[in-house]
Image (cartoon, rainbow, N blue to C red):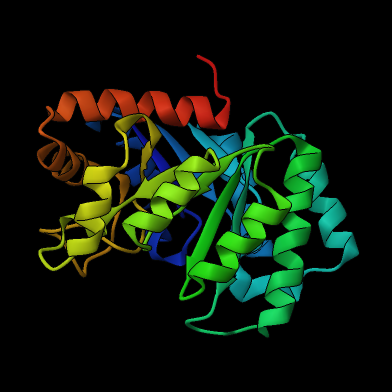
Length: 256
């Protein structure tokens, strides 16, 4: 069975066929999915999805593009939600200097606050970092390393920084980019990172792998990602599928 460690089935891209698509997952070999909140409304929808589908778990957190929605009441609400049985992580949280929707100092403030929330809740974190590699790493090292662990989602940094994250105990999330022909650095990272520290993810509806690049992504595309990792590592797809499933179960603290 395959574990999609990062999806956004609350996204409007799935409004026309969400139920049909999610109902097809088990038959396609998708055993578990973590739906990841990004905004206040996205978190609310994520919680609802976890209640509807036995195989679907949730992460609650506010993406850097949406941290303007946060205040003390919202932080208390998020903390309350972390007590729900099927909420398994705080995320996605981090920094995004590509779009710079919110001022960088505001992003940093709420990133640190949400890392603290994860420690209080004793849950792993799901980290978003875009064009902010050094600041993201420095904040994690100072405010979170050695505590509840987590994954660097859709990792896009260098092999050297991947090594630094591994040294701090984090997992590396690998998605559709590893299948792209021009993704030299990502292929190098996937080759380098030990299999026991890799999670596979879609980030759907975004980042569909080849041969479906540019189309709406879903967990049904994960075999392409698994095959690419297996090829780079000289392993069978079955080995990669099984190990990454076990990795996600362990990191998210899911049993059974």
